[in-house]
Length: 451
Image 1: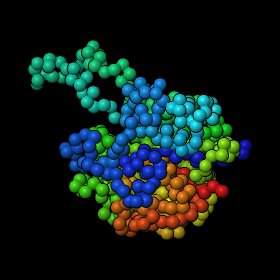
Image 2: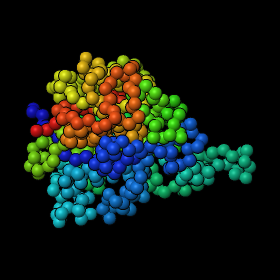
Image 3: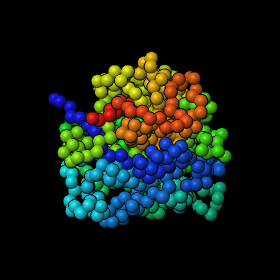
Image 4: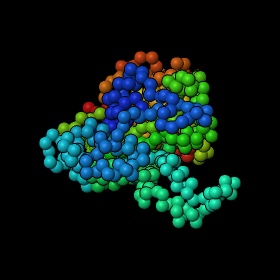
């Protein structure tokens, strides 16, 4: 059976440097940084006290009036996904249920897409519960509160009293599949839907799944990508205990995340989301859609050595990249731009660079590399789709933003990171890679210039 061609027609990004893909891309070109001292909570007891926060994001701005009550059961991660989906749909010129009900469909009274042919695949992380709300409920489930030393958590009290201090819908705020749930309801996406929770690889895997869904004819369009907020005490605690965070830049947060730089000391927590619109080529042509790029290859693999430590030779990343190239029927010499995750940890950056060099061959050291994390840190499950959106726009515009804080590339990485000024580059084919810092999943996507 002939595989259908799949193109990118909409880009939706919410990041610490901008709302919308244009605002984010322009901020990268202008070398503006979104990493600040954390304001969402008091980080003073942590060794790393900086992060990337998305400002001025209100879910009410991205849903119909009739759906605003549902915002009460939206965790921060869900709000990020709903915002990114809105920007993606608007950018693609789609008149979904949401756009029509908001009165933003240029007078149209019905959608211009078939809901039964529009799917969603969204990557999510481990959503952090509202700790203040949860702590209050837990405090009401202790034995003999009058005697401090005797206070112990009681399951009986929790079942009888503690749980009653939480809203009956409390759990619905924190299930990873609720990102896709709300997005599909808001935009009436009735084709196959899926949620992928594989850390920083989630977005690439979700886009790859959507790519396959459209290729095989199960949908004509898909909203896909990911979103996550690590800007909470649990999101800061986990990587802190694993020694992955930069701790030397609390006074200079804009210098904290240094992808592939020889002085890099760790990553930075962040929040953000990227959702893109994938569309079957003929469907896109029929409605006169703008096409940013074509998705031509997808590959995935697994680090079978360790759930927490990258392979020094980047084997899993190499396998994913090689699979994506075979799927795209492209030789490594055809790739003109590599978008790498570059989270800023010593081992992960070196492993990723080693894997990509092995996959792309002897000329890989000269290949321009796009790295974004210096501007806004590690967005978790949302990071990959933000990167894919920026890569697609770089192909479309013919300009590659520079990496921030990569002043001198570590010789151990041996990659040609775009630094200093933006680079004019008419890219015909690019590869984007991602790997989960915990779990070991890796994925790669090949994008081609269309036309």
